[in-house]
Length: 131
Image (cartoon, rainbow, N blue to C red):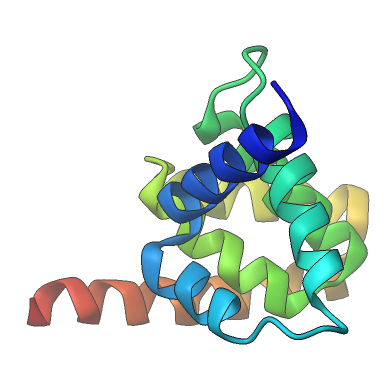
């Protein structure tokens, strides 16, 4: 697959995992400064890594959540909680990953993640109930 095909496949995968609205917003905010970085993310994170056959998207979501807790990246974590839910991860599985992360990543990081995840889950449920 060439660079252009990888980019288009990455854009498709990114939309499927993160949602059309999120990706369209990111695309609308492309600039000369951030454009090359967004293209890199789309080509390699989404067009290469998320498309590998070794793990399902559901498994990748669980792993990504754990890594984002370890890195204490709340904005990315919130985005990936939404993605995990759309990839079939249950709220119980998210909770278990966060409890597990408490031991390996530290209780303060897991506590912040629990609070953020709970808020995202509530917002997601409220949106789906209003549809």
